Amino acid sequence: MNHVDRIFLVGPMGAGKSTIGRRLAERLGLSFIDLDHTIETRTGVDIARIFDIEGESGFRRREAALLDEFTQRKSTVLATGGGAVLDPQSQQHLSGRGVVVYLRAQVDTQLGRTRHSDRPMLRGDDPRQRLTDLIEARDPIYTDLADVTIDTEDGNPERLAEQIAERIQQRGSG
Image (cartoon, rainbow, N blue to C red):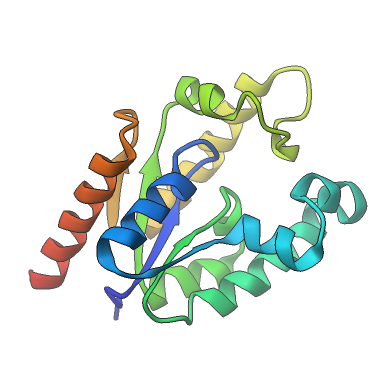
């Protein structure tokens, strides 16, 4: 059973999960948690440093443990990292504990929104190809988990948060 007071935002980097999530939480009177930010706060280092020290597998272990913790919290909007859906147990926590909202964005939009960040998954010579490969691999998972899918190309966080709130309320009353 999905809990309308637990909303989990999934999607690729640059889709707007953190920005839209904050607005959505405010609109609905819920707490907001950014999973990546929380990992950085708890470890005292940024995600790029965690990747450097522990590799992606070490980061994913930390991510899965926190996702388990935060998907159990009531009255929460949780913005996950783009790869948080890769772990099968995390998929179960997301789909079984709340409403999953897939924020979808095109590769060009992702590139524009992430160009000034140091994201470990974008290191290398061809960030566009990396984003394309990531979305091809992850889109089926996002789609399968999603209770609601929202295209974020519009880019207006307030309007997108309003759309999500309306879609969730329609689900709850339907």
